[in-house]
Amino acid sequence: MTDGAWVSLFSGGKDSSWALYRALERGHPVERLVTVHPEGDSYMYHVPATRLARLAAESIGIQLVEIEPDDFEADDVPDSGEQGDAELEPLEAALHELDTELDGGISGVTAGAVESEYQTTRIESMADRLEANVFAPLWQENPRDLADAMLDAGFEIQIIRVAAYGLDESWLGRTLDADALDELEALNDEYGVHILGEGGEFETLVTDGPHMDRRIEIEYETEWDGSRGTLQIEDAWLA
Image (cartoon, rainbow, N blue to C red; front, side, top):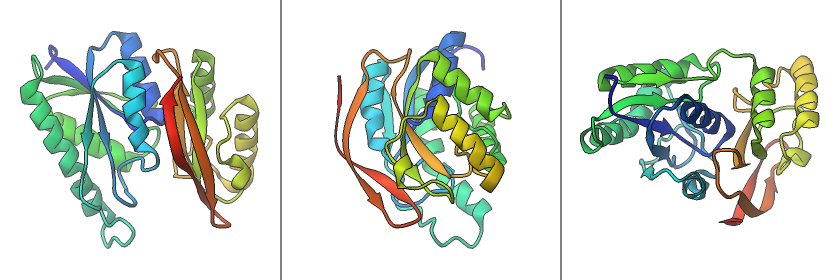
C-alpha cells in the first residue's frame, strides 16, 4: 500500500522520537502516534515514563493513541519468542482498528529499533500483515553517529532509567550531551555499555526537539537500589 496514513510507534524516548522526526522530514504523512503502556517489564516496549507521551504528542501536534495491555508478566518467561509474539498482539489489534478508521488505511509504520532483531523482525512481520511499509532510520546505523545527529538536530534528551554496570546514580536525570556520549563510549570500551542503551542499559525521554512546539518540563525524585535506578516523575508540563 502506498497511499494512506503513517503511524509512529512512539514512547517519548530518543529512538522512537528520532524515527518520527526523520519520517516527518521525509514527508511521510504521520497521522497518529501509538504508545503502549506496559504494566511491569516488557520484552518489546520501552517502559518508563510512557505517560509523558501525551505531553509530547500535544507538543508535536499529532493525535496519540494509547494502548493499555494487561501485565505482560515478563519477569519470569520460559520462552522469549512466544513472549514477544504475545506482547505484540494488543499493538497489532490497535493498528488493525486504525487501519479501518484512517483515510486510505495505514500505509507505513515508523520504528526506532537500532540493533534488536528480536523487536524488528516482529514489527516487520506485523507490518506485512497490515500491508504497510516500515521506516526504521536507526536500523544498524553507527550508534555514536546517530547520537551526534540527534544532538545536532536540537534534540534535548534526559536519562530517566539506568541499569548497567558503570552507570551510577549520577546518571539519573542527566542530559545526554557530547560529554555524556564521550563517557558512554569509554564505558562501552570498558564494560560493553551500548552508547544508545540498546541493551536496556538506560532509557531516555526527549524533552525538546525541532519537531516539538513546546518543551517538556519535569519534576522528579530519584529511586536508586544500589545497582539500578529510575526517575519517579512527580509533575510534568509543557513550558
